[in-house]
Each structure stands twice: as structure tokens, then as C-alpha cells.
Image (cartoon, rainbow over all chains, first blue to last red; front, top):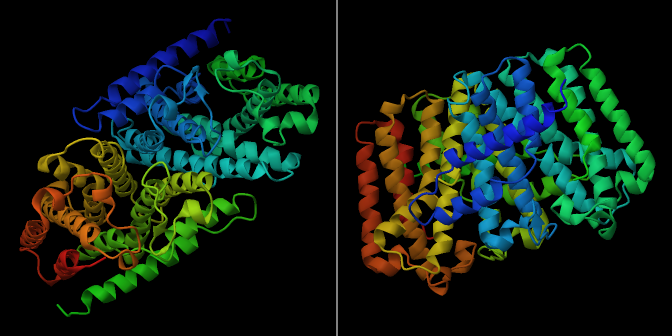
Length: 297
Length: 297
């Protein structure tokens, strides 16, 4: 593994995802233009593209055509972006800053932000259901199923609800763990799962990939809590110190900062162990796991 | 055709859709309970279930298994319900009343309403992608595609954006027609299309069904405008007189009430003509077309 593996992969996927959104979301010549401009504002030019990266890195282990993987990556990123738009709304987290830019409801208006989130939500399923993503309808419907289950009430949306309830409840460590597995982990898990679906890995061959995704998902959230606890808003590109302000229990508040950091490192070691039977084709997934505990934003 | 055909069909589908939501949305025993309770509050026990009715009526013309059609009906109704939840939000139409009950953001809170809408949005694709809807992955992915295109920026969400722009623009009749074809017509069209997909009607055999759906969709909206113009909030189960208040052009403001009513009747005649080559198996679609111009709420 060369040390440039991850930076190169991050730069590559960022360009590919921006180009895909640009191509797949042309601004129409009627009053819907404002909606599509809002979708593009939120979806393009920002974010680490971690979910598309995980999806493409997994797909490439199984020889998947890059264009198909990028399309599926664009779909999962659309779900991530829509969730951020709605999460940033005044009635939710009321955030002003996202990826270093004003949040969508400030750059446009609240009604447009609600609609643009909804339209990006559909866009994900539109992209996945298009035969350009895979000629095989079974692959396409499995992608839809994996993403739909990960984003709905059984996954991300359920985790977001638990997060709202957390403001007025005393959650213990198992409950916070469950909350985060749903809120962040479900979609990170879907990224890996979708790469495996494109690679036609049978369900029984995905166990180690699911283990990897579960571990890096929790490590990711612990590091997010550490960044929120200690971080720098300018570097993070979003508001920090919010969880303590909202009276929410986090891994840091429940464990303490140093034990939380140790737990994140342990989870990454465990994630790497899940990949032990893979050769160099899994080096990018390994680099992502290490990056997750080393990042500062 | 017996005169009880439509009332019987409406009562039947209402029961079936409520039972399907009840079965498919069990309240979990954790902090996600509030989310699922909000989804159930909005989705169950109200609404005419016109989209599931159209879907099931079309599917039954082609001998589709009823349970499969009701599942797909439940999916399209989820999209309709989610769009109403978000449309009723304070930053959108700010409505207090829906199906004669307090709107979801009043019965619960705004954040829960945003999330419950999002979760119902996913739920639609979750239900369609489940093998219980069809054993054939091609049928399932075609259902997803039809619904995704009808609800996203190219369809319903695009129409809602045009509707927001309409408050500050002077739209002419062709633009209002286009707006309504997207905002309401796209999903009504998808209902008929999805019935045909379940019935394995090839694309080239769906032209007359699409014509039928386009005509009843516009007629439906003209009658909605007439109800908003003349109607009774208690009967409508929602606020009326809103369009004039918001300074929006409608079919009624552009054409006048009586010519608008005549146009709705003409569209229904045209919709019936599209079904001319069908026998009694299309009687329910015919009854729906007639009902659309005769309803007062």
C-alpha cells in the first residue's frame, strides 16, 4: 500500500460524484429550475464522499465496472445529502453551516430545502432503478432494497428519531450505540453492501464485509463525537459543541474522551481483522478504516 | 355496472390499505416508536385512497393477485401521504387540518413530521422492493422506477416547486396545466402505470391507460380548484379558499368556475373514450372517472 492510496481515491471519487450529479441533474428550462438548482447546491462540491468511496472500493474488489459503481455511489450520496438538508432545518438541528457553506434553507428558503431533500431522496431510487446502473433487474432491485432499508424507519430515519428523543432522555451506552448504529452505521453499512451486490457477492459471502462496516461505522461516530467535543468549527465545516449543548449523551460523555478514542482504535483494529482473508485488493478499505480514526474533521 | 360498484370498491380498498399499513408498520419497542406512531397517524384511517384504488382497479383488469396490488397500492399511498405531511408543514402550506384531524406537525411536532414524511417515503420503496410484492425482480424494479420518476423532481416534487413559484409569478393556462400534470397528475398516472406493470402489460399496450390517467388527473385538479373556490372546509376535511388567498392562478381563476367545470366534464368524457376497447372489466375505472367530477370533497 502506498501512502497516496487514500488521498488519490478521495480526490478521484470527489470528481466522479460531482460529474455524475452534474450530468444526471440538468437544470430544466421551467419553474422547476429552482428545485434542481437547490439539489445541485446541496449535492455538489462538498463532503468527503465517504459512502461512495466505500461503495466503489468494495465494488472494485469484485471487478465491478467503475461507471456502475459511481452511479450507485451517487445514489447513496443523494440519500446522505437529503438527510443532511432535512437535519439542518430550523425545526431539526437548525444549523447554519454545512461543508463550509450556508445550509440550503439559508441559501434558498425552508420550503425549497424540504422539497430539494425530498427530490434528492427520490433521485437515489431513480438512479438505482435505471438500467444504466446494471443491466440485471435483480441487481438493481437488491440495490434499491439495501438502500431503502438502510435509510427508512428501520435504519437512518429511526436513528434520527432516537437522536431527537435523546435530547430529553437519559440514554445508556447500549442505547447510544444502537442509536448510532442506525443513524450513521446503517448507511455506511449499505455502502459496503451495495458494492458487494454490484459485485454479485452472495449474501453468505458478505458477513465479513458487514462486520467491517459495523465496526468502522461505530468508530466513525465516536470520532465525530470527539470532534464535536474538542473540535474546530472552521475545520469541521459545521457547528461543533452541539451535543453537550443539547444535553445529549454521546460516547464521549458516557466513556470519557480518552477511553472513547481507545474504543475507536479498537474498533478499527477489529474492522481490519474482518479483512484478513483479503489481499491487496482490500487495501483501500483498510486505508478508509485507518483514516476514520485519524481524521480531525 | 351496478351503482354500488364504486362505493363498494372505495370501502374495500380503504379497509385493505389500513390493514396493510397496520401489518407492515408495527410499532417497535424502542425510541423509534414515536416515529412509527407518527407514520401510522398520518397513513391510517383517512383519505379516499384514490391512488391505491386506481392501481388495484387497473391491476384487476389484467388478473393480478389482489394482495400484490394492495401492497403496491400501499406503496403509492405512502408517497402521497408523505407529500401531504411535508406540504402541510409551517414552512410550506402551514395547514392545521388534514382528513378532518390535526396535521401531523400539530399532533406531534415539526421535527417528527419531517422525519415521518421521510420514513414513509422510504417505506414505499421498501414495500415495492420486497419479494412479497412480486416474485419477479423485473416487475419490482419497474414499479420502483415508475414511482420514483413520478414522485421526484421530474414529477410531483417538480410540480410542488412550480406551485411555490406560482405564488409570486403570473402563470398562464398552459403553465398551470403543466404544473398540475406534475403535482397531481404524475402520481395518479403512476397508479395506473403500476397496475399495468403488475399486469405485465407491455409499454406499448399502456398508451390508452396513460391517456385515461392524464385526463382524469387534470379533471381531478380542476375539481379540487372548484372545491377550494366554493367549498366547505368541514366537508373537505382541510382548509379551503387558500389559492385565492395565496394569489395563485388556478383553473378557476383563469377560466372561470363554469367553464372550468365544463372542461372537467369534457376531460372525463375523453378519459372514458380511452377505455372504449375494454369491456366490463374497465367499469371500475369508468366509475372512478365519473366520481372525480361528481365529488364535492
